[in-house]
Amino acid sequence: MISTAEPSIAPATAPLALDLIRKYSVPGPRYTSYPPATQFTANLPALRLEEAIAEDNAAGAGPVSLYFHLPFCESRCWFCGCNTVITRRRGAAVEYLDDLAKEIRLTAAMVDRRRPVTQVHLGGGTPTFLTPDDLRRLGGLIHETFTVAPGAEFSVEIDPRRVTEEHVSALSAIGANRASLGVQDTDPAVQRAIHRLQPPEMNRRAFAWLRAAGFGSINVDLIFGLPLQAADGFARTIDDVLALEPDRLSVFSYAHVPWIKPAQRIFEDRAQLPTAEEKLAMFATAHAKLTGAGLVDIGLDHFARPDDTLAVAQRAGTLHRNFQGYTTQAGASLYAFGISSISATETTYRQNHKGIAEWRAALTSGRLPVERGLRLSPEDRRRRVIIMRLMCDRRLDHVALTQELGLDFPRTYAAELAGLEDMRADGLVQLTPHSVEVTPAGVPLLRVIAMRFDPLFTAGPGRHAQAI
Image (cartoon, rainbow, N blue to C red):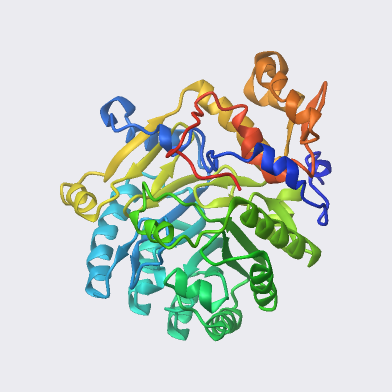
């Protein structure tokens, strides 16, 4: 049965309203969580975060999602905003796995084993920095300590420059069935500018191995706004990638955050970054080519083929959003492992130490390696529901939210609804007595619309990357 959320989904070929994007695009959260991670605190005793696992178990035998951060890379891509460890020493991964095993067992001992794991994600860094034997060891730990459901979604991030057929075989053996390949751009000049040389043959080879191993969904990551990029060149990148026939694409806006990632300052020194107008032209080009090729605009930077589970979930109104972006696993508690990873239960978020030394020291002492986190207030949880529904369904149903939140939604949030009037006048949303509907023109600005329901949002330089 199709959800009432479906009418708000933009047609695949809806053109972008570039003037409105220029007007409204400002720096803001991506809302992979609410409240966003900028609100986390280091006052751990007051948060009682370990109690959250017991609370989570007591809430019922709901599903579990597992995330493992494998941070190692052989070389640094200068655009990268991830928490990585740059090394060529393979022994570093073995040592990391030793400590990861401690964290897995500490956490698994607290989680009800009857709860099914419906989603596993290996992120990085570069998970394929690990050897095939290392990956088999990690897979063994996962299956030994948790109850992985038959048919669980098991995804892995892959660097086509570092993967081998043996890696793919090992990943398949431990249950991986989805992959996400980092491509970014296929132009050799752009690749040299970002310190990531990746000939097209590497991408084709990785796709062939993954398809042969039975991977049911392959995603490709692209980035626009990188040095030396322009709309015509990015159009060629889109064509190159579409020729590989991926099931999903993530087309990210480059987040220039040199105050967090100093390596990005090299782009400023060389004056190579595209202007805001050039960046917008790339976004428009990507959107037109991908929707023109029949892919569904899931929201923000995600596109999927109509038969992909992400597109199916969007049509059914069951799409969800977590720290890995859009997902089909609504209602799953997220338990994350490794440096900087973030776990999420109904009432709390907790983030691990970002440095290996601090993370390792906590595990050596038998403690969960948590650095900061947040215990959500009842109002935080209500606003999380509202923002999630906007980000995933592109609409707010007043009756449904009144029932779910246990309050009169349009009366309680009358000020926020009234605050959408300028967006209504510009055609980004439609306001009725019963709903807020995001129009096709408003879809690229979902996170900006969501900000109107975020009382914690603080504008200003150095807090968030530009929305587009």
